[in-house]
Length: 427
Image (cartoon, rainbow, N blue to C red):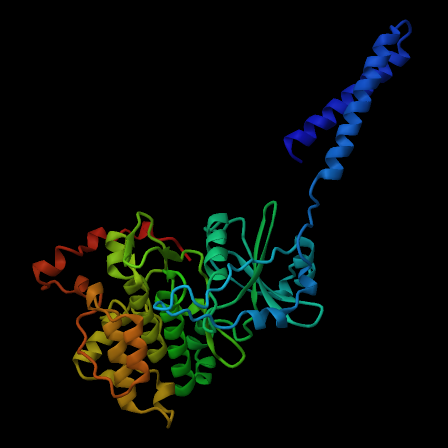
């Protein structure tokens, strides 16, 4: 209840009480009764007008009746070439606003049986529409590290871009304390669900992994180069890569994505470091500088995880500090196949030369200096053109931190004492 409604109710009650007192008390002047009656009538009329004119709580479209097929037809891949300005421009996407009651009904009252998982934003539920179509509902948690700003950011960014390798946002619901985003449903959950499970990883054969790698690369290329806006994701990781029923990848979670404005603007700086430890580029962690090359670094880490089947931070009890260190050690020792997931080595369709090539591409992406890394356009070309020559990679980011013999030029710029993990926002 807002303050105006509270004031109207208090005035109404006081007027009615005063009217009753003036009527019941003997000897009360008639003009007092008239004044109190007028006040009571005015207050009651005001309360009625307020209640009638007040916006209903359930204002918004009915999610249960939402036509998912029509939305899919309208969501075809948008490819606006940068050299064709003014042509083929689409209108701004209007994001549907759904009522809370319809979202509540679609998720069966947010039941635990419909819960798909929980991320940094909050719990995610499966919803079912009247036609039987399935959706994913992301509900902001009261204890979430993210909030309304991240929700607005994600809705703004993803509503403006459409690509087959980006998850589709269907609409949102903002009702008092409820902040909800509605997405297309991805039946195979996220990449990490398969990749780091000893049993489920066997479903990721070489052909499927290549399909995922190339799809993620195409999605990032679109964000960096072909969308109407230059977008830096800033939190690319295996758990943010969702898989549809055909195991096609779709990049998700744009809560901390940033739009770079202007053709000439290639990077930006921030005092608030967000993302996930192990995937963040050195220049971003140490200096707050992020660019499209920051996403390239994250892609390189994801590529190494797909090839090895190992998490980037799962090397605490080994001589290597991270997956990057391990990959670099094996690359320089000419033992690349020791890095590869055994499941792929058993796959007859997997060529060892291609595995070595993909490790080379990944190491090029995670090089310490941003200017040494390729663009996503270069990465897509290297992935799809086997004849394209590859440069030898330089040492990956953060690797020098474990090497006491690093040269001064290397260590001066990136001291381990400057790595303040408390700046990182958990996701």
